[in-house]
Every structure is written in C-alpha cells, then in structure tokens.
Image 1 (spheres, rainbow, N blue to C red):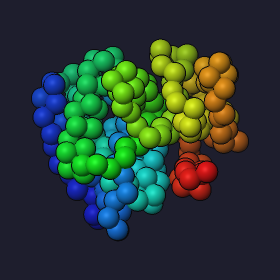
Image 2: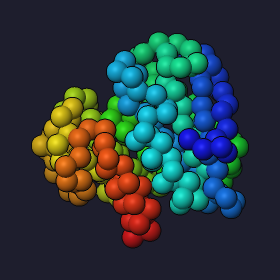
Image 3: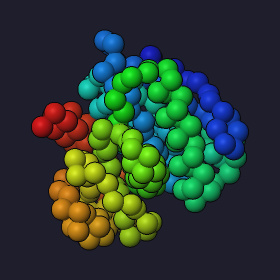
Length: 207
C-alpha cells in the first residue's frame, strides 16, 4: 500500500493469519479493521477497494489493519463460508485492541468482507460492544444473509454493480431506513471510481 505498511502475523483459530498495518502520521485516534472480498474469487487484503478503505481510515487518524482470510496468501486454513472468517476477524480485533488499548474501533468491508464485519458487529453488540461505525462497500445483500447494522453505517454501492445488484442492497437497507450512497457509473470493483469511496468516507465521517 505504501512504504510504511507493516506486515505482521497473528495466530487465528485455523492457524497463522497474514496481516498488514498502516498508521497515521500522528498518534492514532482509533483502530480500524478492513475486510476484503471473497477468498475463492481472488479477494485479498491488497484488493484496491480494501486498500482505498484503509487509506480513508488512515487519513481519519485510525491505526488500520487488514488481513488475508484463511486460505489466502500466507494465511493458513481453508475457506469457511464466512463463519471461520468472522472468527479470524475477531482474532485481529483482539490483537489490535491489545496493541492500541482504549481506542474506539471502526470497521470497513468490501463485498464478502461486508458480511464478515456485519456478523462480527452483531456478535459484539450481543455482548454490549461493537464498532463505533461501519463502512460497507458493495454490501453482499441478496447473496448472503447480512445482519442488520447500526443506523450510522455508511453504505456505498455502484450504480452498475453486476455482482450485487443495487436493487438487492436497497431491499436490504429499506427496512432499516439506511441511506445508500450510489456512485453513478460504478461497477462492483469501482474501476476508475475509487476516489469517490475515500472522499465520501473522509468528508462525511464527522457529520
């Protein structure tokens, strides 16, 4: 991602997990976790949308961690349909909250990663915790059972998403009364539209 990106590893439920950390220039104001798209379709923590989310969080002052889910890159284990991957992300969260104790937490996910982070948020909320805010890009509604999310969640979707039709996301968001930012002309991977993701997150975060 940049010259300052630090690669590290943690031990997750299925073995070693390959991770990356990016730090803001000043002391971090929070911790952010970023989750990548589907492991069986080329998704990695170096996906361009995942990196764009990481850049946005760093610009906001967050110590930002990404990871390769089990079976991706140097991460051990094998794909587990979002269940084990949620456990993996919980392990990364535990690591980051030990390293940066007392700081608020934010989540940013893309495609399959939105399912993992929504599930993790639901799990944390059941025990009285959770992230202060979520950013979900290309939310995988319709393809997956995506739990309800907090009312301050940012939803970003491409107008011409061929993988997850916008209509499916609107159907999921409507009962929750959640606004959806639609990027005109954008496909699922936001080719030539990535700047809109970072700009929207950074400019809207404190509203």
